[in-house]
Image (tube, rainbow over all chains, first blue to last red; front, side, top):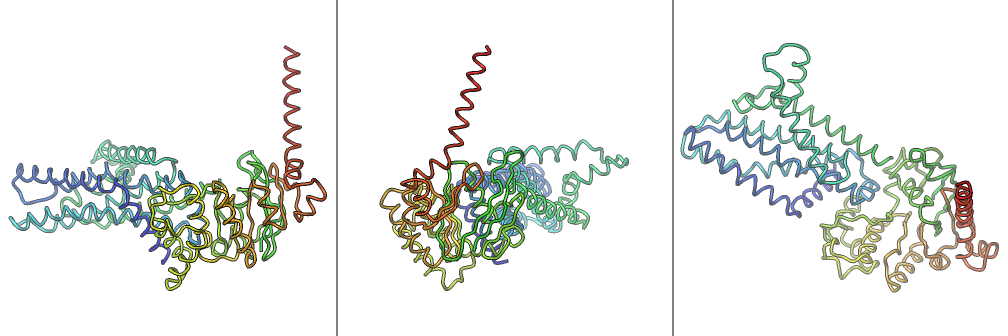
Length: 238
Length: 256
């Protein structure tokens, strides 16, 4: 556990010592803030389902940039050698990196709680969908980061890690829309289960917290942690 | 302290290390020599548990680097050939991070880091960002990292590359002094250095050990200087290969 704390601290340091973090933060807050204003003036309703859905989409575009560094940089610069010859296990390293990216995700979405505060200040929004929406937003963000971490462990350079992650996430996103929501054959059912869109859009944004969806995101996260551990180990051995 | 028995490492079809056996006893300073690509770094990576051997038996401080890798890692200070460091961190931050990671108790950390900074002569850059340092400084930051938890075994892959003559002397004296209490295995190309600090050498060429003896014995047996010994042992095969290659090409030309 002490190792995880040490490593997470270093990862966070790496995040906040690079200009990338601040660029992403700025872009995310500016875009979501502007869209919040647009949604609000257009609908004239004190609800956040639109903006939370949009933020989930925005996270899809920025999260590859948050995870690209994680392992690709260690392999590229060779620091994986000093890291993996220190008395730490691969699992500890993977967990720490994932944990650090989750902390950054929280930092990224925390300022947008201001929008909720504005709604509560000037209207009477239903708190349920907002709380559920934010919970879902965190889960879906955690899913993006988990996929990004796997991709980062597979490739050599940061740019390719970002590109691969973006393509993967986008394909999963599109996959969700290719399957008809009412199709009942096993393949469609399976694809619908795999595509994260069905576990977030129209569920959390409507204020529904379904254990099945929470379990889906937790399973995916754990699976990606496990997969990354295996990939990093095998890649080092070759 | 280090025992290697019949170790082979293959990368696909390439045999990087071929049936290598040697041992380094406690308190010994052993030079590990060989031309580029001979398999020195591969052996060192196996010893430090970075990669597993394809076959053979390895023991470092009595532990197996594959099955008991954490125990091995706790006891080995390793300086990899490329000296990988986190470029965005400051030297002191980096060493603090590494000291924590290597389990140096909180109360001793500051003192240990002060010691290694002094010892490696990098006190004046302690607050600089690693990415901005020259090769010589970075090399010594890597060395400081290897020493920070005061490990009983040091595995140093070309520790004096990129240093100026003054720094080489400093590092050489340091290794000599460290070797009084520790087991040191160091690889290098600078043969004069080996003559000065390593009482015993292992010469490896094309993944095989071609000589292992006390330095003075090798020199009395095979040549007036270690350089002659090195060239004789490691180059003959290359020269033969070269000549054969030329002959084949000539034969080809004749046929044409």
